[in-house]
Length: 502
Ligand SMILES: [Zn+2]
Ligand SMILES: [Zn+2]
Image 1 (tube, rainbow, N blue to C red):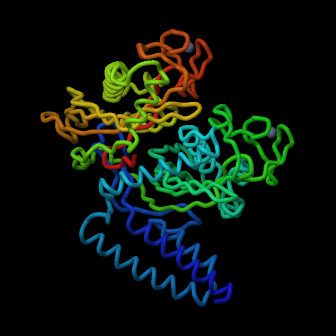
Image 2 (cartoon, rainbow, N blue to C red):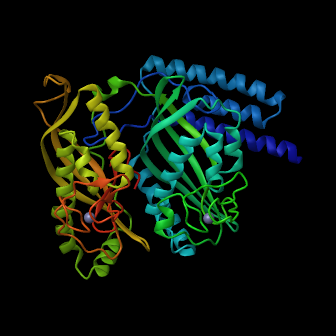
Image 3 (tube, rainbow, N blue to C red):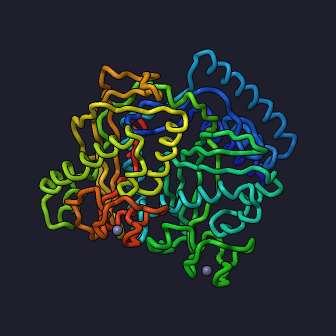
């Protein structure tokens, strides 16, 4: 086989793989407290090179750009035929083809990722999954904000492969993308080779795209591959939490050649900090307002809890680090943290007082739910969760890295969950019968912090009333950023039971 035909076979495999992803991946849910709603429905239309819905545009684009015409044209015809048959089938059955992994598969996958994480942390003791996810969400938001602004897109050149930036060259720049909300974000796979480390991530988001005064809200699932040279030590939390120059720490502002406007250092992509080396849209659809009123049947409540395979060691490690026994700490965490936060967060969700919760949630989580509470308000709706009661809490995972600790619990609760309009008329849900649901909640805290009797009403640093928390989670009384877990536990992730991957 000569090199050219080898390459062709290789590309065909990639295309087949992408197509399989397109077909088997289910739609991303809008995960809000209670987990009752999800987005569904038709529409479509991606933003990748003006391509069509469901990511098919990306696939066709790739085929035409990677393969010679005598292969690409027949291939596209075959794909379109298969795709249209699939679409028809989907319309007939009235729902999406969703391949839900079994419990065993999820548990196995969770164990694999954990082993891969340990291997990575053995070579990079500064690696923190929590900080990495912060970095991924920063770059994701910046990328989408800037993608149609060529003059700004270069500002992040050291963090995004040139091939991706080039895709947006010559795109119409009269489109604005904003209100980017990341719903969920997780690691799919980590691979370490002699010269580089790669981390595949999956990002579920939604955002508004406006062209000539017409706005459309998209819901998107993307897979982004991050890459970094082997043997690099991850940056400190301060440099990972915002997009900054790896050399001087100033906010990212680079020339097309990767020269920092602040210190003049040239930052080659992927040599000091992670860069996005590849990007694929797995799913895309448009969001409808009536989605706020759609109730899907609760799924996953009866699934067994996905526990870390090394949970006993994790308990022991945590207890030793805090000079206590795990049983003693669990009792504190169960009552003072998990239960209290859960009830407080639900209460504020119901009352549409999301602004009052700023100090209890990570920036990303707060922003994503704030968007939805604003949507309810804008439509004159209120999602009531009456008689919320916690039934039980299971411990799922305890993580520790050089900078952070994280505890994930699965909370089982019941509530009368329904939506009313301004006159109190019930529009959706059930105001009489409680529904039972469960969710995985991940709390994070900076290592060394021992604040477990925090009252949740005050700034955990200065003790003033937590009523003036500025953009970026900074307390206006003391100037400290309190939403990164530097002073108390902060809720960082909510995952629906059927979505949790360990
Ligand atoms: Zn610099
Ligand atoms: Zn303060």
